[in-house]
Amino acid sequence: MTPDHMDLVYRVLDDQLVDVDGRRCGRVDDLEFDGGPGEQPRLSAILSGSGMWHRRMPRVLRTAGARIFGTGVLGEDVIRVPWEQVGDITSTLRLKAKATELGLAQGDEEAARFVRKFPKS
Image 1: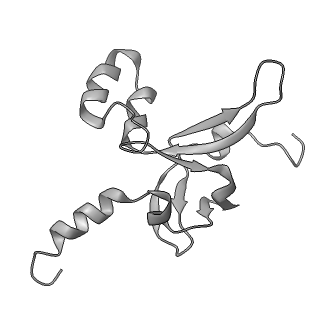
Image 2: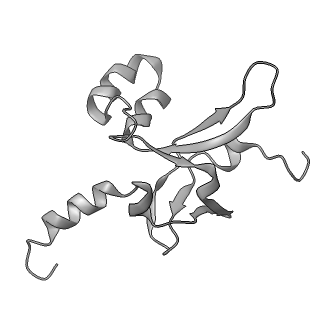
Image 3: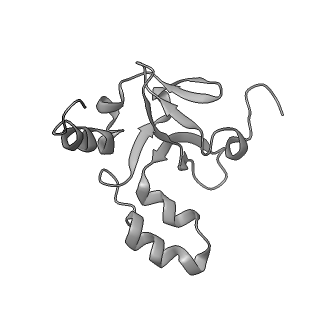
């Protein structure tokens, strides 16, 4: 492979997403490419969220997985992060913006509101 190419499935898929503040905010669940027939495909975005999980399950389990994890509605249970927002690729993908600005870590915010009600939390 040349320096400007990498095997994205092995290198990026399932990597941890870390925002500009060092906050872990999800994983790379799928990749989105641009390009038409005969054109060189270009990575345009990463997709993250529970709505992507059922698509990676064995076919016989996908229907049950969709009921449990969601069906993959962009903006609800799937978040699209433009590839331009990825700053550095090491053992994690470091993002150039805060998780909340990109729509990531929504479950953390919901859980935090619930946990704050408990003493000493």
